[in-house]
Image 1 (spheres, rainbow, N blue to C red):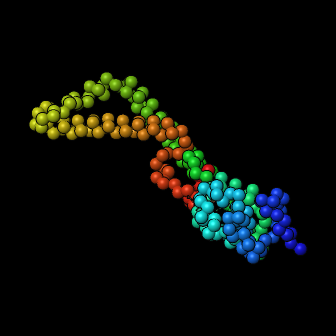
Image 2: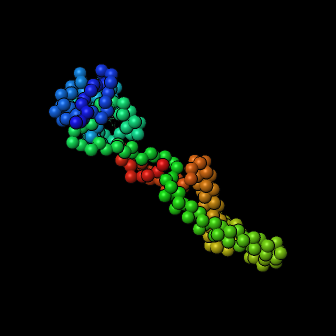
Image 3: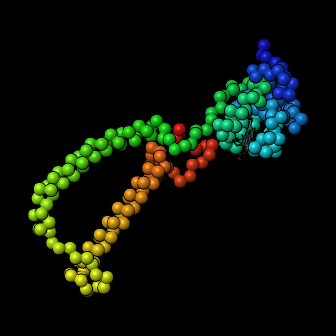
Length: 223
Ligand code: HEM
């Protein structure tokens, strides 16, 4: 025999496994006694209805019925799901109570899958970095040893003139100036981005996050 409805939140003792029929649920459809079923579990929200952050009206509209669809549509947070347990007064007859799944937490720490991908990337990057460091070291050594000859062999660089046609070698000088200014600007931008990225103290580049992360039903599984 199924356990019976022993009591409600207002009377004290609660049997959370009490089987409640749809007809019994339907008897609690107003603010004096407001019950709803969500995912096979029945909740007595009489004392909570006026404090419900989503408003009392949505609860009044679904009072005495299976409110699973509306509940899901509202997209409740982990906090809301944790709060529900204390209002449970039974289980809806004929339904298999489902454990409510809390929406994924959204944060700046990547999930294990993302971490794995990034670790793979950094593992790939490491030998490249080593190779680059070795190449730089080699170039430096050559410069130290043969520096004066190389510098002597280089053509003299003349800074560009702002007025076209003036300065040594008009067109070339302007292009050289443009190139120098461009490289300087790019280096400044790269270092600003690098510093900005470090300041945020997370494990992922800022540009890898979507601009908008929706609450509740986000498909992002960032934990
Ligand atoms: C069963 C116990 C319930 C609890 C403990 C609860 C709790 C909450 C909480 C804490 C919020 C604020 C947002 C959040 O933290 O998720 C909220 C919002 C809301 N709830 Fe509930 N709720 C319950 C049931 C329901 C039901 C049955 C419905 C629909 C019939 C509903 C509809 C809403 C709506 C529409 C919002 C506003 C969502 C928004 O502003 O985006 N809630 N609820």
